[in-house]
Image 1 (tube, helix red, strand yellow):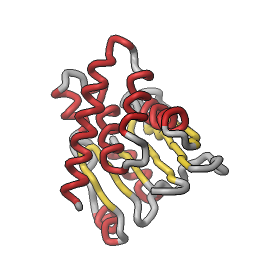
Image 2: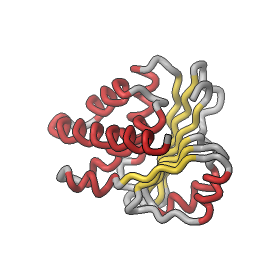
Image 3: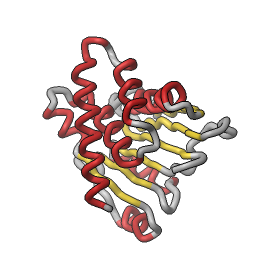
Image 4: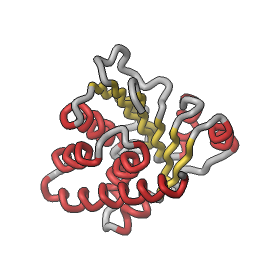
Length: 190
């Protein structure tokens, strides 16, 4: 994807959705040499309420900071799917945590319009690594493996610099796990 790319990460509070967007925006701006703007939105509850994290990426200065019509929608909860699916562009890319999001006819319509749909068991993979809190990092790896909007190296560097030192190894493993699943899913669809 070239030019302006809008990415929206969405789920519920406590899943690391805001952190995922922050890490992605940092990867783009600091390590990939592109422009990016990060915005965030919380529901009324700090944990458990809906939240989203938008990242707008461009080769030139970003003129409008909100991901109001995402090219890429990364969803980690059913509530977020219901709320944000209508905003995705017709040929957009939808990435969902397959254990937390149940797709319906609206997703089929996206496919009919030329969109792409990818499923990853992010939370289950995180649990298999020993801590479900890294599901967001698995999603970031999967997102990079599918889209290539951010380089593998830039995102990995951003992840490792953004997490607590004692969890660097776990997050590195989570990122690489997600990336490998993304590459595999992309090959399977092509």
